[in-house]
Image (cartoon, rainbow, N blue to C red; front, top):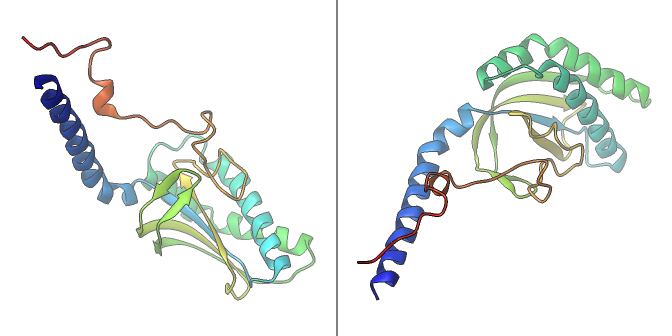
Length: 187
């Protein structure tokens, strides 16, 4: 009976600790990421395919630019400095595909709904983002996280997936702090 009570107490401590940690991190999470948001001209299949081609080239370009970035604020400043290159990259892809859509690029705070990247979920909220709008910007859009570089580990339309252990690792820090092999002993 005592073992069950101790087990329940341990589980409650883990749940409470994890819940408190997640609640404390919710606000800073938005401050610690820079998202990419590419909006297609329309929902026409050709415009949607074009959006993905633009996304691929922008991500490739930003992968090189963000290689040594350590903080989200640094990533944001770097993205602002590279707005002309981002725009030029998008325009080049669009022209290569035979379209003449204008491109708007800006970096700022944007509302995002809850978004899952495979098994990784970012909660709804306002995040700093690089927004690339193609043409009228009335089509479905594509999101990822530029910093930390979650959309740079996967070129799929899904973004990151925890199904592939090379892409991401999730752990419970509170469990890592318990010494390996530790046991609860009832006296």
